[in-house]
Image 1 (tube, rainbow, N blue to C red):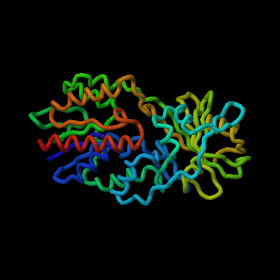
Image 2: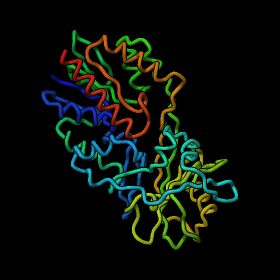
Image 3: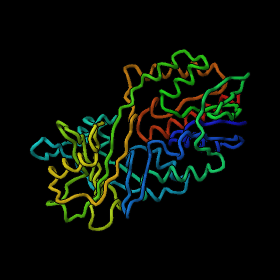
Image 4: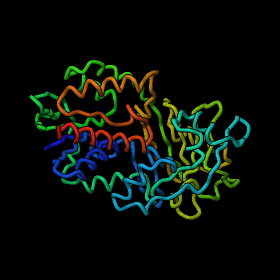
Length: 350
């Protein structure tokens, strides 16, 4: 039996891993970009660990530790070192509950889960991606976007941009909702187009490195959110939040900004310097642009997704997975990928 997984973000990679572990399934993973991981991007820069996307996962959620154990990197999980979030009022940093900070940033998590803290990996969130890609090395195909799906009896014909194709007994679409929606509409799934109505908010993250001596006072807690943002909506003290994020005697900050016309790195530095009392210029900065970042669900989202999945059950084995459907956090994406793989395995066994 052969399954094609479309999309090599953490949901797609987990789906492929789950299918490969089940045995008896030949898995191929197709990724339009030239690297796996989707929004998970970790870079090593001059002894710093820089995250372009998510920097951790909720400690209360079991999905990442379970996956890490399967991949042999369970002992690479690290706990949050510094806790506490402040609110920049425009005049001062005032402590607030971490649950409130999450609400201000649109993070979909309970206050209890947020209060339990976050975990990450010693070498960044790219670690599980790299481990999955290594296990799936023979199955992973990058720079291969999918142009369309055609059902042929109880099988699928998956057309690749550029002219090649794959035939499969099952397909997992681990793509953003707007991409899956186009493919589902083409195979006649009622409501498929509406998946594209899930809004993916644009955002920018800027990482900035400094010498610790450039800060006029020590950092307290894990970061802050801004009550009335000009450009910076929030800032994480990355070098305090998790261990090993910066060399000794240095500080790594990570700012979250809305899209803008001016240079995000300059804007972030100017505002952070005023708030945190930073002297001089950053040693370096790294900007990550997310034209379509975290999804925001419309009312009755879960009901709509359930209805689409019910319609998929009438087709040859086909499943959807990812942040556009079952939750935007990394743990939710891992859970979504596993469930999609299990659904496909059950459907093919009938």
